[in-house]
Length: 101
Image 1 (tube, rainbow, N blue to C red):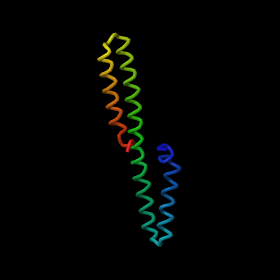
Image 2 (cartoon, rainbow, N blue to C red):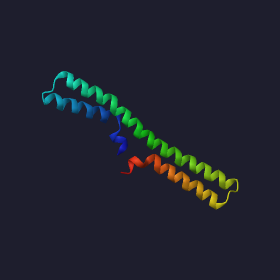
Image 3 (tube, rainbow, N blue to C red):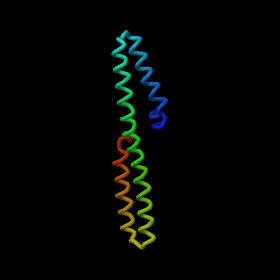
Image 4 (cartoon, one colour):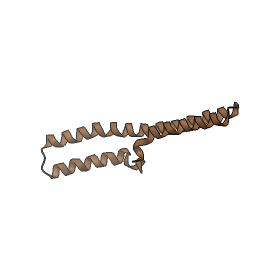
């Protein structure tokens, strides 16, 4: 669902709809241009930040798995491997916390 809501086509469609509604409500051309310009500047920045959080969470998960597997292969104790996995899970939650709400 997040992928669909953050797609460029969807965002551009929403911005165009907002600009159209503002125009229909009788706003001046300058007002419509300011709203569209602000939306085209702000929305991509917000989407970029949100997607970076998702990618960070996936990266943390992958790195944690590699480190835990390597620790097991090198003979680390089960306790050490479990701590690595727990730390990775906490990092993943922190990176992805905005999407669970």
